[in-house]
Structures are given as structure tokens and as C-alpha cells.
Image (cartoon, rainbow over all chains, first blue to last red; front, top):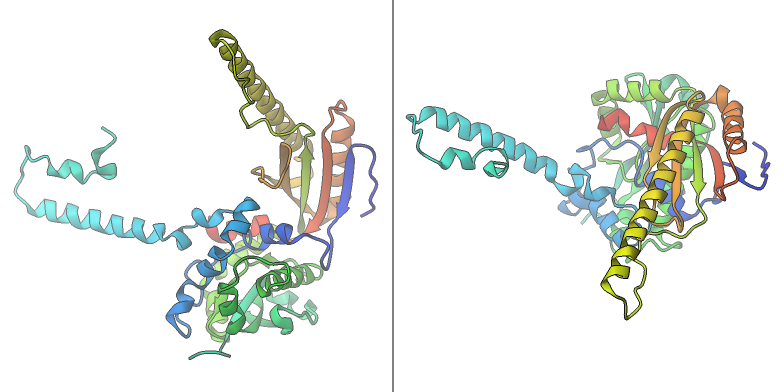
Length: 122
Length: 253
């Protein structure tokens, strides 16, 4: 690809071997690309490595934030929200099962507290 | 207890039929990559010494001369090297498996998704189109003089809000023009959010472009720029690159 800039446009061939800034590379390799969640080597060697990926990145959080990279704050695998959501679902279904086993109690306000959002949307 | 222990690091996945095309590539710590084939797929992978990853945990930052920066660059280099010879699904940095069998299992367990991902990016490359404004970001509140009466304060606030809205509308129009203008040659377009690294308002469109359409795509960008009034925007088109932005969807859904 030729570089043929006129006064308003620049064409930049993809660089090889160190032409990109570290920030450019981080944006690609830390923020993009396939993640097979849960396949990080959680069983190898010792507990320290359970959180290898998290630790690698947390140690660099400030640098990364300055670069506008903050995907881990939304990554369910890293934030643990995925597990919480699953646990939540499981608890809800257990509660529902238990409720069905109880005699009907229409005046009891307790079930409302168990609605999604704790009934806060009413 | 485990100094010197190794794990297997996966850089990318390709179709097993392309495995022979991957030449010698040096990965993290200069360990040559290997091709691990299973289920019709092939992982570009290598054993890595975990000591480096451990040490990286203690690094205070991503220093340019640190191990982590070198490892990140190695990851990028390997994926680019594979991209030169075969359609490639890049993995995100940090995919570690206990051993070679773990890599084989990962390929087998995600076979359908990885195949779908490879189908999506087959014969394509990523191109990025960046449109940068010249004006400084207008996110900050203007500094107020010490003494100002209520009415002029309100008027100034109103003008500032209107200016921000006008700027937002203008950028939305440019983004639409980019997507519409390149739609013919871009199979898919992703508008990346503005990065704090951009000193001025910036649009970044990441397009998945067929290799056969690359010249036409660049021409389309040129036409798009030439067809607009000279409004001080700087345009930059760069590529081709491995489809990092379009690989994640294969697994994230």
C-alpha cells in the first residue's frame, strides 16, 4: 500500500516489527481477540495463578486507564459478576421452590422482597 | 514451589488445513511457536515459562523495557506473522493452558464457535479509518470570570450547551457518512468509542474488508474525503491487520 497523502488524508500501511506504540498494541492484544472464559489455566500449579490474568492487568491498571482501556471492569469473568448472577438465579429458583411448598399467605409482604431488583422498581 | 514450571500459551487459531503455512515464529521469551492441531483446527501455541508471568505480577507498570511489554509485543508479532500466511483468529493476550492436552481440549470444546469465527474472517483483514477534528475537546466547562450577573451566566451556559450539542450532531453526521460511504466494501463496520488518548474529537471506524476489496476500500475512503468540504478534519486509513475486533464475537456472542 503506497503512502499517498494529500492535504487531508493519510494512508498508513500496517507496520511490522515495532512500528506501533505500546499503547496501540495493548489496545489490540489486551482489549480484543478471543477469550475462552474459564479456560485460563486455573488448575495449574498453585492458587496464585487462579488470578494470573487479573493480576497482570491490575498491576497495569493506571497505565491502561490512561490509555482508555478499561474492559476488565465489564468483563464478567474478571469481575466475578457472572458467578454472582448465576448464584442469584440459583437462589431465586430455590426460593421459588420453597415458596411453592409453603401454604398460601397473600398478606405476607416478604415475597415482594424477593422479586427481581428487590421490588425496587415499583 | 513451581519456579520453572511451564504452561501452554495460545496466540491464535487457524484452520488445520493452513497449519503447514506457518513458518518459524518466535513467541514470548523467544520460544518458537508450534502448531497444535485438533478437531480440524490448529492452535498456534508455545510452552512458556511461568516465571515471567509471575514476575510480571510485581511490575509496577507497563514499562517499555519490562517483561510484560515484551510479552505483549511478542503476542502481537506472532499473530501478525500468522496473519501474513493464513486467515487467523487472534486470541487475547494471556490465554494459558496447563499443558498441550489443555490446548487440544480447548479446541475441541469450542470447535463450533472457533469454526464460525474463522468463517467470519476468512479472506478478510481489518482496516481502520480515523477521522480527527482539530478543535480541542469541549467537554470541560469554560472558566467563569469572578464577577458575572445571573442572566449572563445563564446565557453563557445555554450557549455552551448548544455548542456541545452542535458538535455532537456534527460528529454523528460524519460517523454516518463514514459508515454509509464504506458500506459497499466493508463487510462489517465497528465504531470504536473515543479514546482518552485522542486529544481532539475522533471517530475510529474499524472495518472488516475482503482482501480482494482492499484497494477499492482505500479508494472509497479517498472519494469520501474528496466529496466533502474541507472542514479541517484529518483522515487516516490504516491496514491491513489481523481481525482482532472481529474475533471476540466468535466466543463472546
